[in-house]
Length: 389
Image 1 (tube, rainbow, N blue to C red):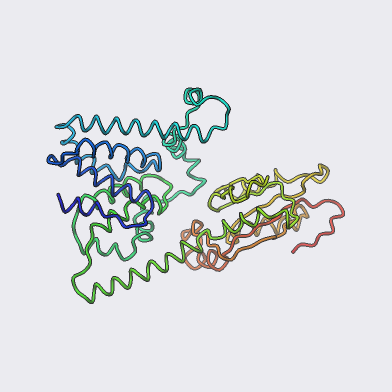
Image 2: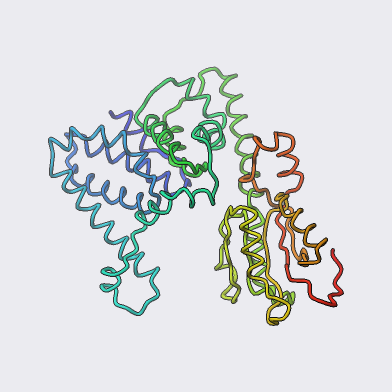
């Protein structure tokens, strides 16, 4: 028991909030179960707070606590006051979170009490309802059930996965990480960040090889893995989003006059970087190309309407569907596409499709055509003398 408690209590410093909460919550589970621990009620109270914070931060958080929670059932049956304390602090913390979210996300002048009665903001409920819709998940991408095991975990752990086989220990932290991975694999949309809490749980339970040669080789591979993934995911993956938004905030200096900017196949644009400028930002997420084109064309002013003449479209250069649309518009003299900004420091790794384009074709498109492009789109009117770029 002491060994498990020590392992769970040492998540790596500097990791994100989800990971820290996973380690701390599991640690408090064991502390609450200890019959000789005088602060069992206090540990249960802290655990209730942490579980509430974890759920309001990410709805998938309970999946990582499920094995440890089952482990605690006998203890709670013997000490019902511990369970009552946990539930009470969970309820009070959840209520505080609902009060905060309702106050923050409602701009109405109504009183907070009225807002709580009429339209409270319950973040886990909203998240659950959104992710329960297959049409909503399709906007972000649908993945096979084995995605987390063949892609997500290798991206997060790399050579550390080999230590799982070397250690051959099914500890409570590893059981929590693996069971959560299985449960989250049932969800059609899967991303590596959903498994972030599994990282400290696994790393705190594996052991390095005893051989100096193997240990040195593993440490070298671990350093190389983190350098490569840090550059790839920390610099290039979706790396053009923030520079693009900063540039858009200065479009008045460039005299672009775009009334609305559409973002397609990118991370959600951080609108606060616009600095309060009145630019309508529409996130099309992973909308199908045909639907994206329809939305953009519907926002472009007709020639006889006057007013703002163009809209913007920010999309990865690797989206080859835009090539056909641009070429067709040129041949029909329908729309005018003008690239006004581009960042080559952008990879859209969410658009990898080996099944349709093969390994060579996919890498040639995603890496060879890396970049994020801002297109200024307007209609071609009579006597339009503009020349296609």
